[in-house]
Amino acid sequence: MALALKASLSPSSSPPSSLQRSRARAAVAVATPGRPVGARALAAASVDPAVVMPTARRLAVRARAAATLLAPAPADKSGVSAAKAMSQARHKGKTAFIPYITAGDPDLATTAEALRLLDTIGADVIEVGLPFSDPYADGPVIQASAARALSAGVTTDAVMAMLKEVTPELSCPVVIFSYFNPIARRGTGRFTAAAREAGVRGLIVPDLPYIETSVLRNEAIQNDIELVLLTTPSTKAGMMNEITIASEGFVYLVSANINGVTGARPDVNPRVKDLLKEIKQVTNKAVVVGFGISTPDHIRLVAQWGADGVIIGSAMVKQLGEADSPREGLKRL
Image (tube, rainbow, N blue to C red):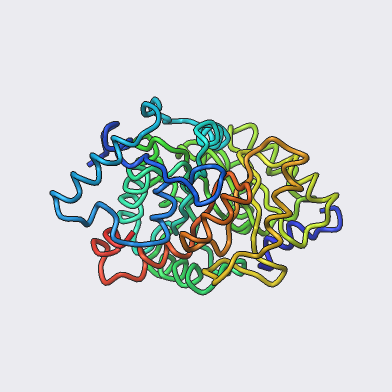
């Protein structure tokens, strides 16, 4: 993952109702003592969610989910920051579910529907990838997804317009994942202002070295945007501490090694277990694990290790973007 590594190796450096939103917020306990893992997070690595079930079965699933809730559904989280959303998940003892989708794949109308769907089934935060022509921190699935979106004519302005329309309907915050080039072209101040106008609450820039984040971080603060920073297994301890302190929203722990990119993997890097302990020794912020998290077993494992959330990217993008039609993609998602 050349980009995220660059950040860490720098020398210094129709809308759903409130009832619908709460229907799927059940949790299942992990096999060993520890925090319960949201059923929604485990389901994200699979397919055939309730949305594609026959009506009778779907109603039964919803009834069971409602019966197993440990607490009343929270108030509408519109406008809630990523940090607040993570805090709410931790307060309930849950591992937060953060799905990633590429904006505009297969089209922006489908992206809007996907955002509503993911919010309805219980995402705590949603990460939206801004398509870029050279997404070299991403694996083949997300690279292909970005290429499809760009071929369809998707632009940053169009993505922002779509988000501005959809985010007021969502109960969870949206975080943009963008390479620095599109931000620099527009200007950091204009980009963060546009993101805020679109209802975006956070920003992840994988190819911006930590030592070079000060200008963007100041602009983000002025626009109430949380700049989420990444740390990796190759980040030196001193730099990891600085990144952890500076990161807002949550700390993004990349599970891949130095040559890693996004994409499904058979196993989770065992180094993540120790890194979670090290990071939690210097911060109370939520720590989220991403890159390669793609199966229920992966999710259970990192939850047992102490992760506060999981980001599921390629496994989600594949379902939505590689289907025969947008309708089929939403069903698979």
